[in-house]
Length: 314
Image (cartoon, rainbow, N blue to C red; front, side, top):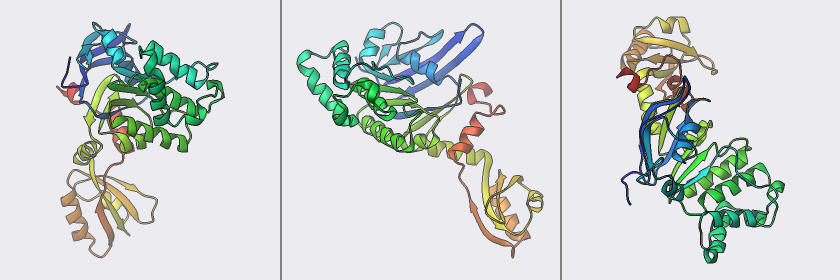
C-alpha cells in the first residue's frame, strides 16, 4: 500500500477533560523530509508524536503513516515507524548487543538476519566499541545512540525522535545531529527539540506549535521572510539617539544594541525609513543594512500571547 505522503494529519485533537492538548491540527510530511517540531513546553509536540506512534489515541480527527490509519491499522503503522521517546527505553542490565538482538527479535527480524541488522545500526550509530558493554555503564550520549539504534534496526520508513539531544553536552549534540542527518538521507524524520540551532542545521521544514495549535509550517527561510514582512528592520550605526530615531515616520520600535552607536529599527516600510535616515542625517550614518530575524526572534514572536495563527483568523 503506497501513499503520496509519509504522514498525513487531519483535524487531529486530543483532550484531557477540559484541557485541549492539541486542537484540530493539520499537516503532511513527504517521504524523505526532515521536519522539526518546535514549541514551548506544553505546546503539544509529544502528544502529537505519541498519537503518530500509536502510543495514544486521538480524541478527534485522524492521522495516517505510510497510508495506514494510526487507530484502525496501528499494527501496520508500528511496522513502518521507529520511535525514540524523550526517556530512552533501555534495559540497564543488558549488554548493548543483547539489547539490540532482543529488539530485533521483537521487531520480527528473522534470526538469520539479526546479526547483519545489528552490525548495520552499530556502524551507523558509532557503537562498535560499546557492543559488549552493559547499558548501565554508558554515558548519556552513548545511551542516546543505543536508543537511535533500536529505533532504526528494523529499517522503518519513518523515524520519530522526541528531544533526541536533551541533556547532552555540546560535543554529544553535534554527534547526534550528524546521526540524524545520516538517517534522514534514507528516511522520513520528525523530531522535536528546544535547541533552535538544531532546527536550522537539520530541518527541511519547521512546524511550530503553541497551545495545541500549529502557528507556522514553513522552511527556516520562509519563516524568516514572513517575520521580515511583518516586522522588517534595519541595523543602523549613528551618533543620533534612539529617541530621535523613534521619531522618524514609519519606525515602529528602536532597540539599542551592544555595539556603541548601533541600533535595530523595526518597521513595516524598510525603503521609506532608509530614505528618511539618509535625508535627515546624511552625515551621521556610519552604517546601515537590513537584518534577518533569528530563530529566537521567530520563536518568541510565534509563541507570544499576542500572535494569532492563520487558523484562528479564519
